[in-house]
Length: 209
Image (cartoon, rainbow, N blue to C red; front, side, top):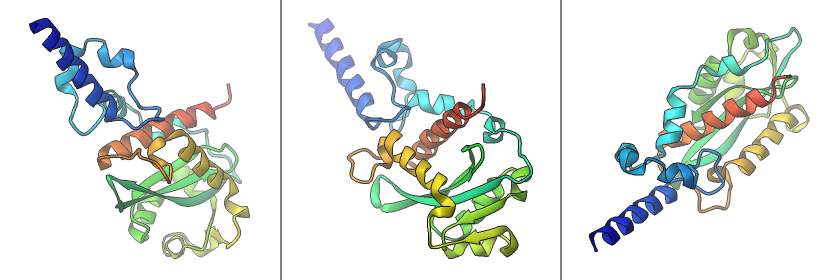
């Protein structure tokens, strides 16, 4: 009887752990990892996140290490994508800078849709890529942060079609970014963790072999 109770408690805990990660996320722990060494490691999982994803996150090198070298004439496409944490009213805008030539994400920032987050994005761009000409939509925050002679803004998406396509990739690959979904991040830390892990993997896939 004690064995049955222990087994049921173990399965119940594993079920709660599995529900903690949205379906469709690349950072979700597989069933094999959930049960491997479960008794020894379960206490280490924070109640609001995925231990394996966070362990990978803290060991990641700087995003700059995943980028191809800057070349003269490189151009950046800038855009922002809506997301939320825990509740839809808790908006988190993901700002992206994507190199048009390599299709790699040069930098990103998460915050509101104002100048402060745009400035955080600009500061996150490696110095070499700060020389690139930038293309963006007409959102006013861009013009408040980037020099006029280095920025081209347009109502048309022709100048930002590659980063717009990457936005679609994000929503396809990460369940928590799908517009109509039951998946979502419960904490800002997990929102940042999953996005960072995905972008690192994505950038490395764009490096010529």
